[in-house]
Length: 332
Length: 230
Image 1 (tube, chains in turn green, yellow):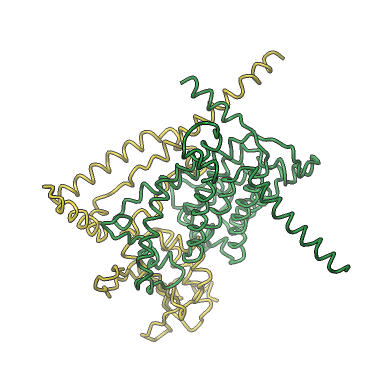
Image 2: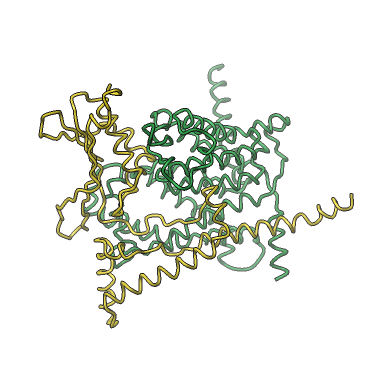
């Protein structure tokens, strides 16, 4: 037990470069910032967060628990815009890394108020984002690539080190989400008794599909949706395996064939790649708003800073190489 | 000075304990408690379909269990598990409510074979003919389609599959009716409803039945009293 505790303390004490958490902060905040800008662009701020007495859809006066925001502010159209402005401002501040952790706290509290005002328009992805903002309150995600870092003169400090546990908690959050979503898929359509027809049925759901997918009933499409339903359940049920892959990579010197395989092929990467395909498929076929994009943004956390650095090097090396080639070509 | 040093030395342990406590609290909420099932859920069309399907599985393995026993057992089990969930998560409920955080990820647990389709229709004054203005996923009828397909608006009208019509849905119908009547001065009445269809699986006979649900009608006179009329 003591050894287990010491291992946990050591895990929580690990440090790493902040580039992954910084990119995670930027992408996740950007997705929600974009969504809030969409509300303003469609002129839906008062419609969604305004009281029914002023033409909105929220019920702020005939309910037992009035959200804190509307206990302080009157139920007017201006107040709905103030709520939108404060939440969007906090998200922008988090995205650019200005008072990063304080911004994460404000983003969480204000975003929670929007959910309390209009519960029906708050979806599972919004809950997930709030859980992630909660972690960002404790993460030093503004140590690089932020206004805070620029102010301290270390915008892109290659030697910066921060506690790694917030990234581990983000990974754990995603594992919990997929795993519990998987084991709760007990409806018949997710089983052989229901012909693994779940994805077929979802594609026929008027509210969720983004087009008429009646043609999916034809071969070979229906069997493909059955296969995809099967893979979805198995992949979600087995998602905790990704933690095992990380553990194997962290302890490469121990014995075991699967460990050796994991270390050699970095099995967490293909596992995560399946997830990316899953969410891209959702983005193409379904009308779930920011869900697939927010999930893909959160996937950054699966990368180790070393892996992201390798991607950066490859990308920047190639683009700078191309620039140099074009300069050489232009100058003869 | 000594106190600060001792605190710094102990910090990794304290931090690890705090993180462990937080993981424990979230694990309590993440435990995949089955969603609470009511008698109305059991007796609903899709509930009865599910039970019939499970009964055929039970019958095929020869278990001597009756349908009524399955229904009562399901309700008792649901009552027990939801009771345990309520008790264990009660201390954290205020914080969870304030921050709207949760770990309940029941995503597409049981895809519906009876999806609902939003329809909006309008009628000119003195006419009996209804004009379809919006029908979800119908490219011919897409009035305000860019607003109605936005995820947060969709969430409001789609969060209405139970027998009770929720208040945000009623507000939604009033909101969209006002927008329609402002955009179309020739119309006098707007009605909004959900068309419930039945998706059958390939190989099964198609079911063309359509059930109209949650209909709400709004007239120009009720939405725009004389002093507010556009």
